[in-house]
Length: 62
Image (tube, rainbow, N blue to C red; front, side):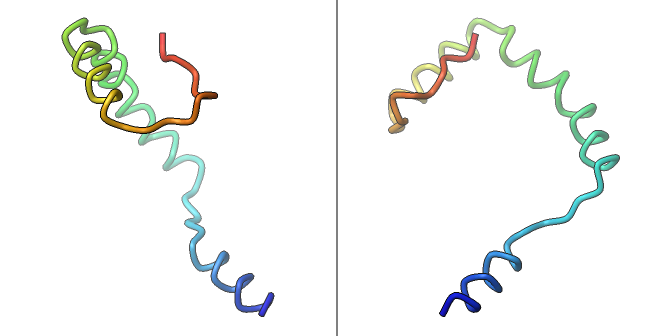
């Protein structure tokens, strides 16, 4: 039974080269920063979070 679980967890992993992840981060990070700098977006995000259930240990994004 353990062998089956080991095989399943291996199939769920994605191997993306670091340089591709860094490229993706460089493309998306500026847009994410813009989103969080906008007060209206933050209000909408806070409202959205109220509809979701989060563990109490989650940090507040500042």
